[in-house]
Amino acid sequence: MSSNQSNTQNGSEQKGKGSESAQTSLLKKTETITPEFESSIVNQLVTRFTDKIVQVVYVRPGRTKILVPPNQIVQVARFLKDNLEFDHAESVSGTDYPKDNQIEVIYHLSSYSDEKLSSHVLALSTRVDRNDARLPTLIDVFKSTEYHERETFEMLGVYFEGHPRNERFLLPEDWADIPPLRKEFRIKGR
Amino acid sequence: MENLDQKFNETIKMGLEIVKETEEDRLMTLSVGPQHPGSGHFRFTIKVDGDYVVYCDPDPGYVHRGEEKMCEYRNFIQNIPHLERPVIHDSTNITYSYSLAVEELANIQVPIRGQYIRALASELNRQVYTLYWLGIYGIFLGHSTMFMWPVGDRELFIDLLEALTGARVTHAFNIPGGVRNDMPEGFKDRCLSQVAYFEKRLDEYEDIFYNNPLFRQRTEGVGILTKEDAIKLGVTGSVLRASGIPFDVRKAEPYDIYNEVDFKVQYMKTCDSFARSMVPFLDMRESCQIIRQLLDKMPQSGEVRAKLQPNPKGPVGESYKRVESGRGALGYYIVSDGTPKPYRVKLSVGSFRNILALPHLLIGSKLADMPSIYWSLNYWPVEADR
Image 1: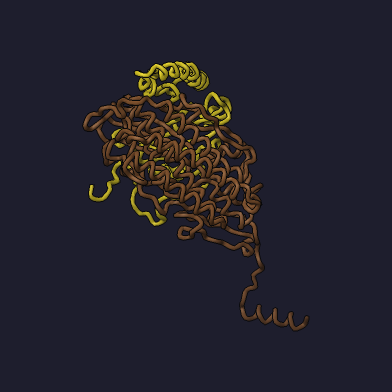
Image 2: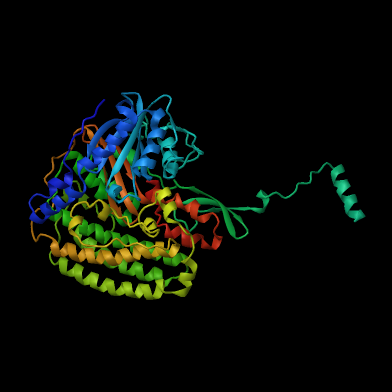
């Protein structure tokens, strides 16, 4: 359980030094976005799903990241949508970690319907085995993940179970190499 | 009648099969693009039943360059010039969020004048992009004046950016820690007179294009994207604001000095192609106000960039930063493993998010409405492919 709630200072907060007006606006900014607000979101998740399922990776102003096991991701996503007003995915990305023999898939979720959440991006991440990368799709919860998941499928070779089209999207149809964003894929000449 | 029956029996004897026309046979499949001038480097397959589109399948990727993979081979500074390539007409904004993300990773503090200058460059560049988009939108609806005027006026903003950055289109102006160089002498006056001229031109645009009955007929009530659908599909930028959601990253999550600037988020509630073409236009007007305020509030002197190490690197960690570009929220997700090269860079671009709305809007609409719907999505194929 890695619940280190680090209050990493926001980059722009430090930039404001040197100008008085910038510092006053900085105060305004911290009033509206407090780390307490972010921690309240993750606390709700942890109380609902216990800390064995939802691991908090970090809580920063405006940004939170949680790690959940693949078999629980749909339930957590549904809870985020129904109870916490996260209504769309901004991006779905994957990172390859050959050392751990894992691929991390990250959904960056945000909200248009709740004004308080509009400055907030929650990273919902999960890790799958590299050799058998399979995940349940979140398309039924967040329709906006449809093309992003297709892209993750072709770029990292993560198969999304239940996705209507695990097919090529950006790569050529006759692409016959390994998924290019895996670390063992090398650009020619480099 | 007997003759017909006889013919029918003969046909069966000959072993030929008589196939009844099915529902599928009535449909015609059309491939739009990638060479089609009306789609850019983007292909989508549509099926039409008479005049109406019944199926649409987007097929991007004709200009996929593997930007995200290339980032893993270069260090944080070397990445800047090639990251501009996905959308060269908006090159300042696409490197802006990259700089913000790297600054957060490596904990770099930007001098206040540097923040103002890059916000100014970002506003000027958004004008350049929107004018180019407006020109293309005009020509594909058959309004050739609306191609000539914005492309001509865009040249004036390009001249301003050339004076500021040294390059016409691909500036490589933003770097983590600030901007490459300070404003030239007399830039403020030049910029102000250009903006004053441009605001007059915007009134003329409105008269000749937006108040044109033909243009309104082709766009009003066409391609309705309701508020609920816009949220569900996760669209962004002008497409989102045209559906009645006043979301702008500059307001929702002010970066740099945007919380010092007073402006309104422009949005419309009619949800149609007209609203989607009008919102960027209203944004241009608002942007003129922002440019004035930035020039006014800017500190008169000072550093414009933080001093960096020769090969900046951050600790192990990750950051996700976004800015408002010409096509909506543009985010960078960067993972660092502590080396001078990023471990993973992911671009979350507005164009890629907005394609999802294309099948949603095209299915059920008339084929003739295709250009007005497609271009109203503010879609830039190269950016979507990355």
